Image 1 (tube, one colour):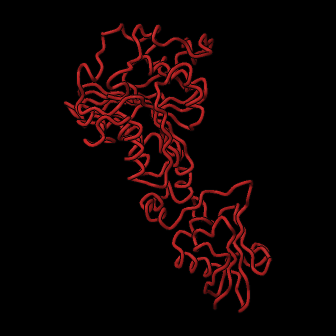
Image 2 (spheres, one colour):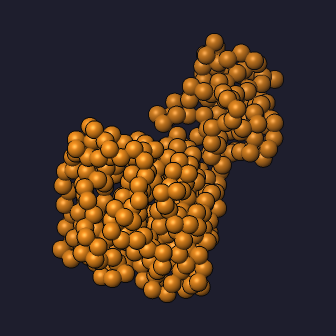
Length: 368
């Protein structure tokens, strides 16, 4: 039996921008299944993470809500009209197009993600500090996953020496601003996302303005002044921070949530200038970037989806030479000047003075 189905504006892009379509079936459930066959991804707009019809979706038969009839088992007659109506509140939930359903199919079939989780990923806004060694794999995997808005902070240009590890950039990009090269690469992989570029050093003057626009921050800086700055800004703005660092054959990763410790709890003071070399001074195995960067990207997606156990109050240590991972516990320090019981830091400070060294404004400023 063929019936007319009214399609509201938020769902019309799924059906060729038509206000109504024909579908075949004996019950409402049959009609929904037929619509999904005709227009892949249609049913994904109607269900929650458990596969049940979402509470913000109502279905009507001849202007009567099916919960007042027999639900999806409601039988239909020739000439009936079915209408699928979502709740509206000045906007509409993110709709997955057929292209998106195919692109993200390996996420959607996972019960921990599903269509509802994929919509969370698409609606997320993530800021990455640095388009270098760590920022490259983080940005790529978040773009491929469908994170809807990716912000990138970097002020350097692509150098030939970057190409050993910074996979956002290619030989033809040498001389380009890294944020431009990064944006082009990410959009080539996934044109559905938005890439926001911040071609500037992150400083005490602009950190709040930049970071406040995002849900989660990923730190790929390779200097201590920037690490403390980003840590303090994220804590004061109550933003989750996914932190990673690499040097030679060693890597570290952890996640800081407001109220559960911060970088200052782990490292109350920076080392004296020159004691710990940067990647530019000591080098780094290129593949190390992929290992730690992919861990950071995974942490971000877990936070977006609110699944699993993030690396909160835990520091992951990676030794590539022995191929060993270790996890040590990190506790919130009640005496921490930022997140402790009696904090003394309530605003951003002079981080160059605090670390005794200037924030680099030349080659390889961020993430190796």
